[in-house]
Length: 125
Image 1 (cartoon, rainbow, N blue to C red):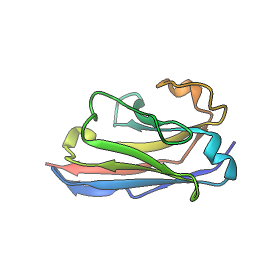
Image 2: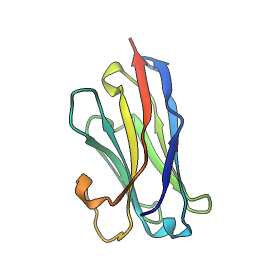
Image 3: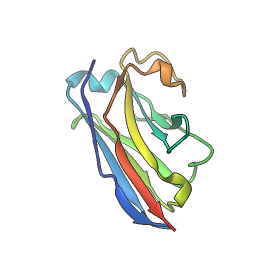
């Protein structure tokens, strides 16, 4: 597995913004499809966004479309999630995940074989 380390979470007021980062430990990062998931208290983990190996394709959950932007810098082995117009329903632990095979284009968590430890995002009303 590749080691993934998220950062950038915190407490923000509704309407505010945060940018999450996820740094990978391997140069093979450029071959991975990367994604962000989140898990709110008492709820199952859900897909948020994913990005293709080269960064040219992205896909978002309906709940975040138009507010969140996923991007990556393969030179820095890092994927980002810019979150705007945050609301209390976005409160969750956010996880980045890697599909090292890179051949799938899926929102299913079972496709992703490496996970970060998570970073807490709390949005106050």
